Length: 135
Length: 199
Image (cartoon, rainbow over all chains, first blue to last red; front, side, top):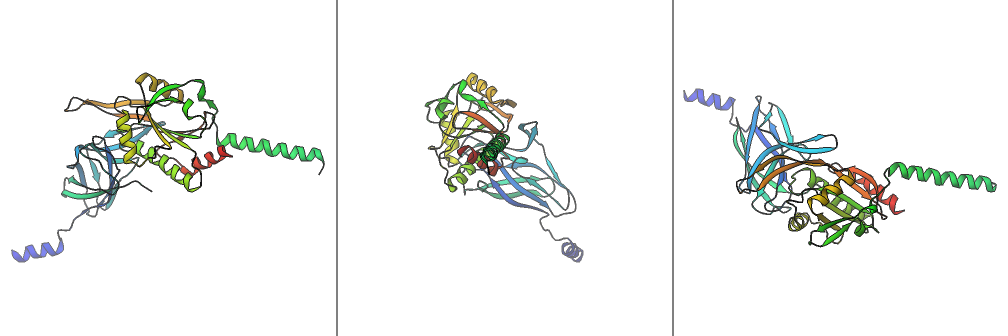
């Protein structure tokens, strides 16, 4: 039995199939909102789903999508994001983003803030995002 | 070259130059025909556009609770100013008008500007009464509609806004000369247009 488990462990090491890269957020002030951006890389062969994001710095965090209608821009809540196996998904300005609302403190350029991403398969993944403005 | 040829060539150059300017700066809307009483980040009254006439102005429409588009628009204006200063052009004014006057008080606008390192010697953030802001938006053909309206657990209104994504270029005479998409602004295009107005 032990040998069987060892073989399984060697063949399928418990590596993280989901990797979060380039996490950043925009500076903003207390009580206001900001956006968190990052890239999800799914290195596994099966899809995984991001369905919730938490943070101690915000009263409310939601997955959002920016959309356009003519020359107007709007935002709407998205319940979840599916990332197919062997693919990546970008949260980026003007597109999908994590809306971080009711900030409990000011976020200044250079600050590092923690978030927890909840995936259906990978479970909870903690990340640190740096506050910056694109150059 | 005889005198007729010289005059013809000179006139042709002037006409071609004017046509080229007209093409790059397609609008010619005199904003000075109507003034609006607004409030800046210091709670001081600003008569718009009367108080901005005399300088080239880059104008953006924003609301400060916006997490994505409006910060992009504001940041594009900030980068435009930075680049202009690098090019030795420091006399351009930057104005951001909020279309969410219910929430964007002068205090909120001040905080929004400070956290983004906006220089109040060249930047003015404006709010005003709902009626005045609505009237002003119509003048600029800017629309903003509340979406996802809710009341939060503290009893405060909570909403997003669907809005026109707009930066405008106003010349020193208070004439609206061109509109741009704010969040995806081509900064080089705006700078070229500002330089054309300066010449």
